[in-house]
Image (cartoon, rainbow, N blue to C red; front, top):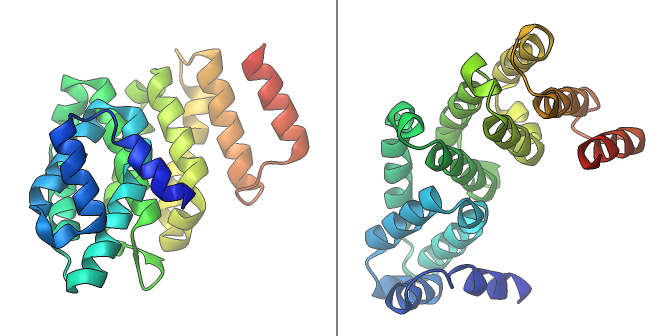
Length: 222
């Protein structure tokens, strides 16, 4: 019950007509244009990083409702098509707006986190998600605190499940992060701290030790 309330709350930033459309999609998806709904959710996610953090939950609810009601997956197909389109244009997106790029990464990682096929993450999203995280690990991105922060947040959230899907790519990603931490010039002290924290987090089997939590929390708040 609490989750539904959260979903309702998260659509308050839309105009009343769009809110009505989304509320119908959440409860009675066969009565709305689900391709339009998918585009509305993606468009908003690229503009609003707070919404992009929660959009996975909304998408999951609509997909479940559509499957139960009509046994179809129009919304999921429309959503994945749109994600693929944005994925192809990701470099242009990053050049045009760093915030929209960060919102996109947050969104695709949340979709990866929420969408399941036979209780497993969707294989179709594994490489696109990895590619986005690899982009955030490039030297020009590591010099931007917002991108490092985004990278570390996503790895905290989905790193463990992503590694289970393809451990070799996770090894390669962390090799880049270690090199960045040790060798790259121009990293801010916050970025260095975040990178060290995520390297240690994975080394501890994706868990935060009490000592590490106290250390990093006190460093960030000082």
